[in-house]
Length: 112
Figure 1 (tube, rainbow, N blue to C red):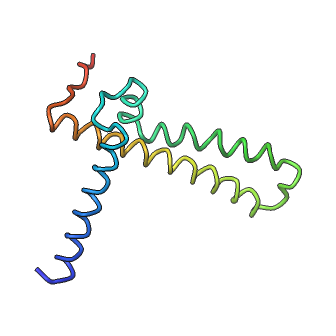
Figure 2: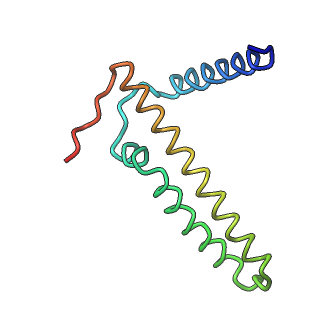
C-alpha cells in the first residue's frame, strides 16, 4: 500500500477510537431508549421529520422578508441542513447500537 493510504487508514482508526472513547465517556454503553431505537431504525424519517418543521419555522419567522427565489432557497437550505444534522445523528446512534450488539451488551427487542 502507498504511504498515503497507510496514513489515511491510521488517521481513520485514530478518529474512530476517539469517537468511541468520547461515546463511552458520555454513557454510550447504556441501553438505548425507545426513542433512540426508533431514530436508529429510521434515520431518513428523522431527518425529513425535522427538516420540514425547521424550514416552516424559518419561513414563518421571515415571512415578511421572503421576496425572491433566493430567499426561499435559503429557507429550504436551512431546513435541509437542520434535517441533515439530525439524520446523521440518527446514523451515529445506529452505529452505537450495532456496537452494543457486537460487544454483547444489548440485544434488540424482537420485531413483530
